[in-house]
Length: 117
Image (tube, rainbow, N blue to C red; front, side, top):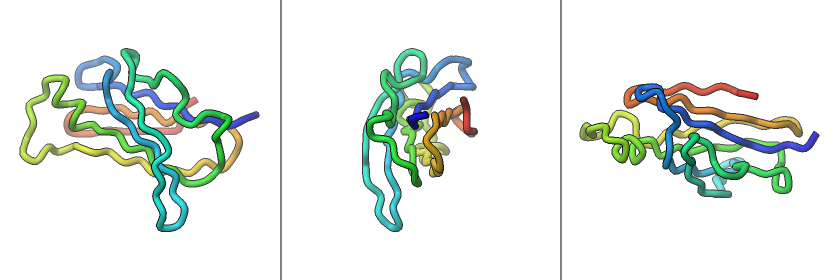
């Protein structure tokens, strides 16, 4: 099986997909953090293409950075100063050639994630 990476962002406060949320993918190697991609979620809360496609997949440590604050502001959530959740970084490892799905369940005051399928 060839590996690849996907995500799905759901706005649990509004009960809908998080459309228009900016995501960055970084590869972590020691103290070096390298930006690989920038994407934005579509109307289903997913990216239009795999975040890390099979052609570029490599095992290792990665970080997904979700720009939650900008999304929350755009969706009409009044910002506190400073906003409780702004940038949500998720650092995780991919140790095998497989499909890694890393969803984010988001609200203005909390989030959760898990390895999905």
